[in-house]
Length: 185
Image (cartoon, rainbow, N blue to C red; front, side, top):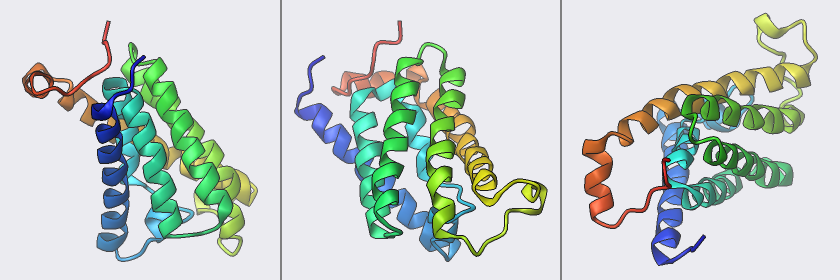
């Protein structure tokens, strides 16, 4: 595998998109609580599904973007370290399972919920779990809540975005201008 300046530029573009989407979501919702908090639907995670199309540059971009976004709303070192690791694992899974895109997106969403949910509850101990999850301990409820959110962002929104961008009429003009996509065979 060869990583050239185009790949580096694409990595930077996806990192910037990840940060911009997170900041815009926090701004428009009116609180970073729904992007960085215990009940988060991080819309930028929909980009993770695009690893099936753009490969390693996207994997690096969503990982770096998560570092920058989490450092901006600094909850602590675990969030700046483990959040990007979750994105790295999720995007890598999607890249490796790209021949079965829907399965890849579903399986790829799980590490985010499990990894982020396993530590994020430590930052919000004062919150009780949602009523429907009140039978679970707080840490387990957080894992379930974040896994559901991650499935919505990656396996629903991200998969839909992947399908749209994979259309011949959209991807072919981009490829003709030099955009590299991973081999779909």
